[in-house]
Image (cartoon, rainbow, N blue to C red; front, side, top):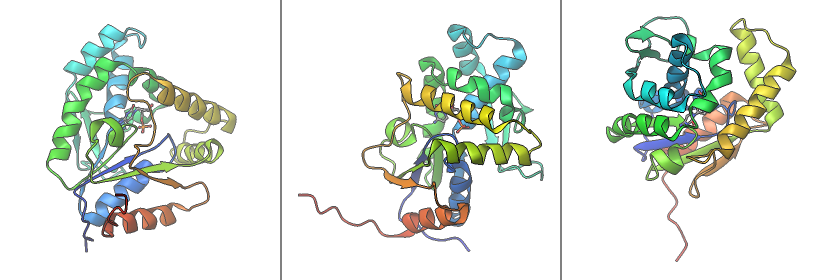
Length: 236
Ligand code: DC
């Protein structure tokens, strides 16, 4: 049975490893909403650039690629544990966009203003239909500044790196923890310091520190926030 929410558009932002994707997908399922993880779009562009040999530092070429690449996000087409299927120009790239080379380059690609400009209309179009949980870095601040509910998930760098390390290991990508920690740190820096749409909580976001919470606890807390009636502001 789905639960009822007074909110039609729900934005969840936060840094790498904060639990956004897991929590966002679970929330969408509980509410019967569409789940849209905007990070997959930046990942699909990065994956396509690497496969086509386009240098990641060539901003003009990467921007053209972002403008031309047709990205589709569909309900899972294969029962292999995926939350959705990602197609780039018709090719199934659902798992390819999670490989380490993409992780290492996606923050650079997502810094390019032209790439962000190319992705935004599609993200807004999906939100217009309502009944959506949209996850990313700049959803509450830039993409959907009028989202009905904004949640910002956070956790310490150490804890987020631990989560990423465990996820990777579960997928068979064994790497030393220090390497994963260094990657998460460098992505944090790039995502927070970039000039366009940097990672930060919206002024009206509810901030949740998940460092000492289990995944289930975070999900229950977020579902509770999304299904409770908003408290009227007491500010004059
Ligand atoms: O959430 P993720 O790890 O899949 O995101 C991949 C990259 O894309 C990350 O470096 C930040 C960027 N990103 C972004 O800039 N804006 C978004 N709305 C979502 C992701």
